[in-house]
Length: 235
Image (tube, rainbow, N blue to C red):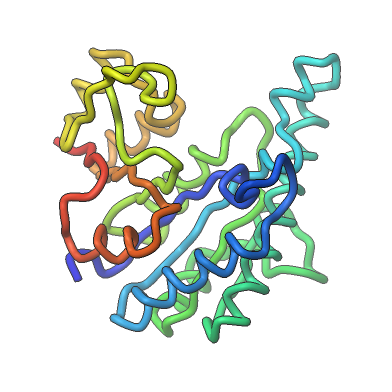
């Protein structure tokens, strides 16, 4: 395997499958199988999950809700998704721990860096819920922050698109895909990979990002094996 320890960033919408909202058990099972395939080969896996399939803080704030309250609701949504992932992983035989940035001791461990790293070394999948624990920060920022803290080799951003394009491939059939692009070129071209805070934090810490289609079975294994899947953002 090319990477020993990865941070996988999943959007909440990815858990919907073909549904309009909520969580699709079949999609959870697919993800569990893909992740088990790489942990069986010795890859250590940490995950940050979004909450957009349940509630998105920015959307709530745009409709008149207090932004801090809305973001707290979004954080709790990521914990719900984390519990769903944990259940699916354990059903697939994957030892899993859910850690949260906000204390909910009855359902999850609080985030403790040393404890998280110890879980990873023992082959447990660690899911980080609750974002950063602070309003105004996205789960993209949480993903980069946690990746740096647990010393991950790479951030894998699993999406429904097979990489980074010069325009939106779902709207423009002539969009051109990049196999590799530098951090500077992403900024210069104004491409949307992550929010600015997360992207800058990744760049400053020389942490590469790979954007790939997580919904195609087997792609995750190909990425950690070093195959040219998706788009790599590096220096």
